Image 1 (cartoon, rainbow, N blue to C red):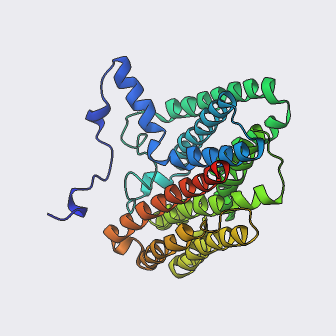
Image 2 (cartoon, rainbow, N blue to C red):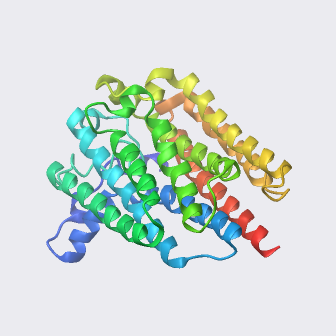
Image 3 (tube, rainbow, N blue to C red):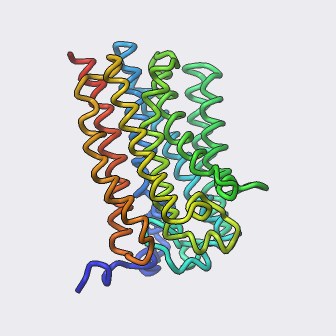
Length: 326
């Protein structure tokens, strides 16, 4: 039996049924799509490592607050994206999805949670993020509100609001900034680092890897997105153009790391891993050219893209720890 034949295409409602508190918590947790949480956790860790290097110490309290707040914003964005895609009809007609990566959580379509319950969950997560932001404001001052409000707005407006950013072809950039530049520079600033060109450069590879995740995940959804006016970059560029852009993002990430190493902003060995990850990126970009016609290759490409982001972020954070120690 092939791996493809045993992959589920939807969440199984029976696995989430039940009135107990633990079952309710399971429903809420999985509705947030936790498989994507590294996309918010790791940028905060990387930014904190930069800030710790600059400051010579680490403030664990503000690190934890920033980490949980960023995860809440991402979780809210994931949930509200499901709400927006149900309202627009995208997820309802999406027959090309690759669960659990694309086509949303499917909780609304499978009647695990209602659309209104999902909306309340998303709003609740934003409230929690705002309360954590208030705690950070007490510790660090009003500048933190700029980071928080910008991150919330970009994450939520990707698929909601009178003008959905995803429909304008700028949703990918918005998400890359919301879960790349903002959490990296914000986490570093919270630890005492200045927001200078070096820090912004450090955040760019992470932004590129985040953007590549979204770009890749949008490929199986091209047909449904296009049919409902959600004109993402893959809808606009087609498979060949999306494949090229995907690899350019990874090449740009590696190029920035090389430049930073040459400028002594990072250790000289820092480019080794990002350059090595280009091999995985090339294979994944090749899978994009065939799109959903080869579901197994597409699934592996999505998982490889998530892996590239994880490995790359951990590596960059490790480079900063190396500079702290040595």
